Amino acid sequence: MLLKRHGEKMMETVEILPARWSQALAEFSALHEGWLISVDILSSDMGAQAEIHDLPLTGVVAERQKTGDTITIAAARSAAGQITHTIHSPTRVWIERTSDGADAAMQIESAEGTTTILRLVTPARPETVDGLPKR
Image (cartoon, rainbow, N blue to C red):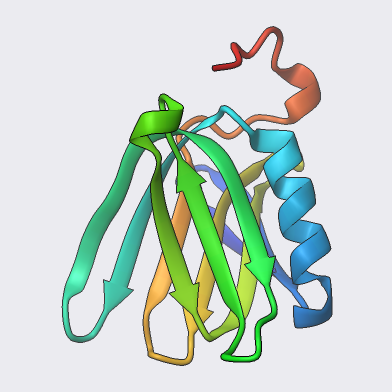
């Protein structure tokens, strides 16, 4: 666990071990389904690229396959307009939390050398959010 200063708030970064990816990402998805997210992709080849901007999270899923592990992030305002981003051969996953324990972001590194950053637009503890609208 690392603590770093983010603005005036202390942030804690927790690494999720590969054996727990499936369960931890399912829990993250259940807690934050419908929350607005932004996703950026960072790589030495492309620099920083915005992939998803202020869309409701539909889920983050880790899958083990014969061809290699994947993590898929999905977001959409409607079923017809879903956007997905798949990370092939993920190597590390971190969740960043505020000092009061609210999830703020998730960072996923891949063997290809890219880093995907999922940010919750408004980090808050799920129990403090009243009446999040469902799609």
